[in-house]
Length: 610
Image (tube, rainbow, N blue to C red; front, side, top):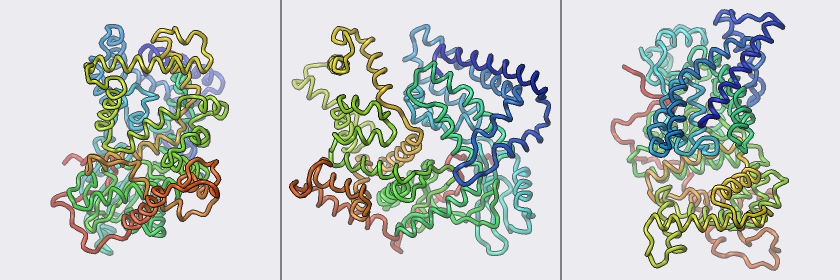
């Protein structure tokens, strides 16, 4: 929350909570004095009850906490107390005009604050780190360093939960069992053990006690604050819908039976599609339950830090696997943190931590395929319709988007992205283009060039506003131009909830690719999968996308149009490249670097203290 809006939201929420307390207690005489154990049991019954997969009720705690308003009020007071110092500093910075000078320090302080606020805040922080539309960009960037790691809870308590959940005695089932957890995170912690019956090593993940109660309460609070936040910040995103979509995935993440099913289904799906280079840990069903998950131990090292010769190939495998999930199987792994992508000792890619997944409906899959095909074919005229189908543009705004200068801006962005190299090289190319456009003689300083670019932007913005019928746009000052453009963009575009998971997944993959190749281009690397998919999919929408790739604009008649032979040849090469990149691993795969065996612990977990 920024500036005074944070104070307004806190006051507003406190007043509503106080009123809620009085009304409910007078009406039904509810007491907040229920013992914690009883409250935890009620939360499990109301919130944790699983419906058909993917339909767990994240809002199931709303009636519960409305009937216990003091529980919510205490949490609100705790959040306010922990946040007060940070909010006060931000307000002081604003009043003293030193926001830019202090932004790095405040970003670090926000990172520390989010970590102190607990599991839900950490998860929200990870989401906000890729959502500069909801949080100022410098703060969002600071949260990219957020590590979901906390001190482990007592090891004896973890073993007690394992024995109770599985109805076993550890010494009867395991010949060896780590005295302390080998890794810990906010949701759970991991032990390493050896099965007495088979001698196989396994990883046993156990959920932290009462985590569901804490998550349910925080989700209730987030939904409570969301409308006030949206109103105070004029955000063109359904924040309540975003909380619900994210909350569903988060609540599902707390059910380890769903994670076990997703883990096994992924390995089966990849094997069925011939992607022999990628897999997931093998689940041990007899030693798994709602709060305990046991898998075969995976030996390997982080793909992002491996020095093996086959890392570039495995980066391609990872991208193809995620494209297959997104556009084929319809179940996307939502947390490809670098620690979740391992290079195994036999040279395969192993994807860990299947607690949070996104279901991708078939209609959305084909909409994404069509959009990617239009991007590759540079068919920018078709993209406004793509934006509507993908949920970025409200249908009633379609004609305004078509009439806008979207094509010019989009072609510029995609041209830069396709050249690869990540943010640093992209910035350098943008500066070069600015120099070529505004200062071909190289006479301007950096500051003068920026000023020239800003003047050009404002001139284009005024022209666009005039085209939209905004009165007096040609003589508006800079502040009014910016305000009108922001309002226009909020009307034309919105951010659908699913995109945050897709963006997080592929931005992480791009980062790993750049770690092994500084010129890595995720746009170019996606082409082999697209080629394979369009050349083998017989559906009408896939065929239409293929025509767009080969002949250009979709409305061209293939009987009269000339095919783009270079594109046809590129697609043939892409198909071959895809086939070789995803084939089974050669038997002589190089071993990992010495001393880098990796645990199949949660990606966001840190090693437990000795």
